[in-house]
Image 1: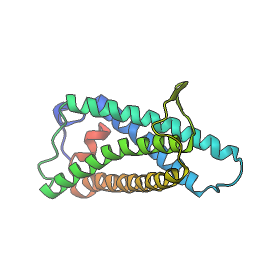
Image 2 (image 1 turned 30 degrees about the vertical axis):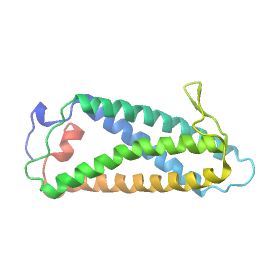
Image 3 (image 1 turned 60 degrees about the vertical axis):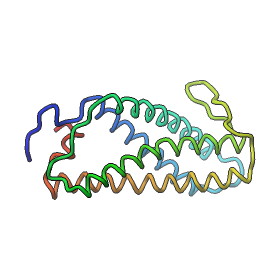
Length: 182
């Protein structure tokens, strides 16, 4: 493994954004997967608390994703290692583009889904406005879309983590070190 100077690493803000978003998204995927397995019958306090928590974390992740996107546009990122083949560079770009698309699409579909269901979304003590009028039929369709986007996010997380570990243990390039600050 080669040593890197500060221009070859991600800065502290980038590392913080990355790992904070990673934790929030993994928590959201986990709670989402748990929620889809719970029965839709009667008044279930556990499910209601889980849904409210999921929404709060989802809004926080959306706000953080917006801040992260702005920060990323204003800051230069380190280049990929010269040993990384072009097809992997293209794949990394596509995966990161998909991550950002999902970091926007998932909270927006969740918010619209809540609006269709007539269920308010709160964040930091404020009620967010409904984006659409209640409509049960559209709620169910959007719920399926939201679920599948969540599965796509889970798949991307696995792909991203596997690629980072492959770079570290197989290719032995500094890709993972840049984000771990080793």
